[in-house]
Length: 426
Image (cartoon, rainbow, N blue to C red; front, side):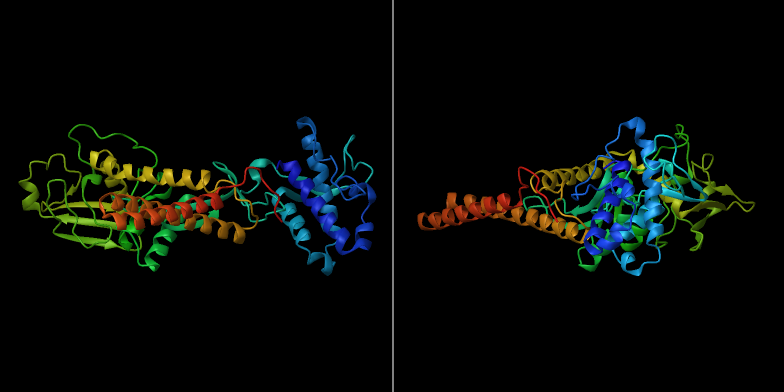
């Protein structure tokens, strides 16, 4: 809903709830305020359906009305227990600034005959993405990239050859949260179930350098493109600190591009700094010594000073340019097909429930149904293949099994398919 619609619907919901819970307190609210949002028969008014040129003025009226309602029942414990009142308070904090002096209505405002209220409407850019988006589902948040709603994080296997790929992890997250925050919890969840992968291929937004380092320490290699681009591309024959192989775990010595391991290292775990010292005699005979970025000391020893983060970032940039990376990263395309399957065949793109607990349950069941469906398809195909070469009695049994599994699969598809027309939920 629009911003004006959010104000009007939240106020209307509060008035409707108060009318049922406490008619006397509802009647104590000025009639002019009530009728801006609620008709006498309980239906909503058209106050929120304003032309764009009037929206800003009506927003100011709504903001003052929210403050009036919150202030009127501020010390009333019974009203404050109502969820609808809590939503009013949240809306006031999310969308409005409370000022010192009362702000009166202007000429043409619906509340010009009423006392002013010390509140103004925030600029849109000042409203947080985790602010209230709808009073009917307070858990919904906003993402500038994907809009309002929830997000679902999905992980599945890849490279199972003839076996079906299986969804191994599903989690519902807030739209306002960055995908970057979902990477480590996913690895942890898989590790708890003893199915932590050695390699995880993910989109760019999931793979900050910090996540790559942390996943590496946990035993999972995170394969993903690097966000952004290099400040200056490397010149022909130029060597950079990123060409040195620095192990984030510290289990192996840093290795230079010529293949020489450091004689010793100094690491600061708190700062994430690494100083690798290379034997001066070995470096003196290296044909790459003139282009080496490691600093040369008086005794001929060369020292490379870097950080784990910078080293890993540079290594990722170098690896991203190779054909090996392109081949490994191509596997990620499989999850897009799964996303499409869950959205189009199982209705994941439009969940018809409200509230994060119900949404989470619906998502889990849809993912489970997708796994069961894939298993059924696999068993049906195996039964059909086996029937082609089996003796006649076994062929009949195999065909019977295939028909039964096909019927079960159709039943699953029918049950999981979203209805043709949306229906109301409570």
